[in-house]
Length: 195
Image 1 (cartoon, one colour):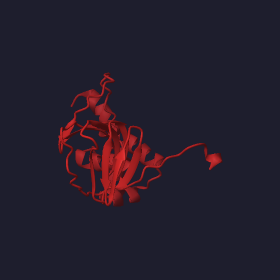
Image 2 (cartoon, helix red, strand yellow):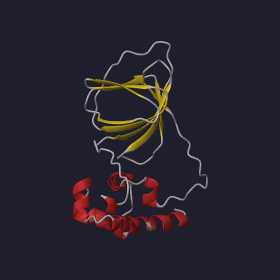
Image 3 (cartoon, helix red, strand yellow):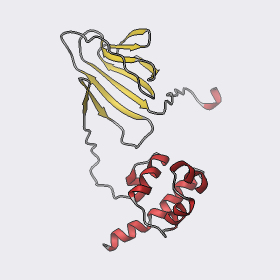
Image 4 (cartoon, one colour):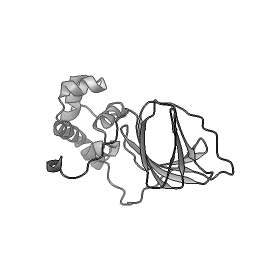
């Protein structure tokens, strides 16, 4: 193994220990959360055990950090983010966040159609917050059928049947924050002393 790689691997354990302590998590709590024994985690943090993907992936999810941060991967020097659009249900989703698990951010584009679509509500676990950037969004949640204009915001539990589409057949652009665990967005205004 290259000497530089060996040196980088030696820093993984102390980095994991520092991260766990900064979060105020005990080895016992971490062990219970990710299903890895305390002794394995202790050996990993002390450098007596090499990091593997099987150990690092659940740690990255638990700490809510990219895997690169856990292993101290060098930055590439290129600050550009190369977004890869996802096409689903006739819409385009552009991921704006890359963290494993937790809240995910997307830009969603609903293309213009000559005839507006008939709603086909779906359900799934989680909670969604959306902000209309452009166009007129038709949002169906349960019994409600709403039209949102640019600048309007909505949030809803995705276990409720819901559907998003164009209100008038024109294109719609919106930002979406989605949390698979169902955590609601919290809006804070002012300072703590004002509340």
